[in-house]
Image 1 (tube, rainbow, N blue to C red):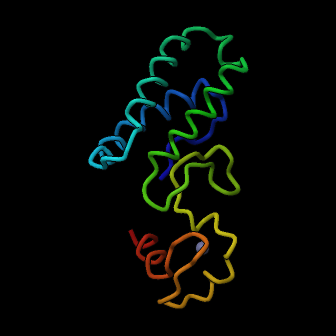
Image 2: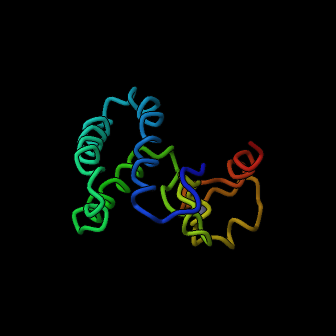
Amino acid sequence: MSISHGTLNPRDLIPTFLEAVPMRLGILRGDAFFKGDKEFKRLLLEYEEHSSQPDWFMSEECSNYFAELMKLMQDVAPHRHIFASYPGDSSDFGWWPSYIFCDNIDAHRTGMNDYHCIACGWSSEQVKQYQGD
Ligand SMILES: [Zn+2]
């Protein structure tokens, strides 16, 4: 699922990422062990505090903030998904199924229906279903 495409500028990426978080929080809130709400509020407040300061986006503080936001995006990712830029297109950020990044790719190519990858957790059947959606 693509969240942001065509820019690597933190001024574009940060608000776009922040906008995508509530949908995932809504889905995850039922999990008693989930603690993303607090971190999201903290990052949202920090962004609102700095968003009108152009210099902030070029600061080290902003780099650190971006790393924390990337971590939150991973924390709220769907099961067996990775928040990253799409392989081969560094400006296409989104939640991608982890089999796309799997090093065990030869094993995936065998196409056996009952194959279950120990590296990424995706079975051949699940990959087929995902691609069929
Ligand atoms: Zn795999």
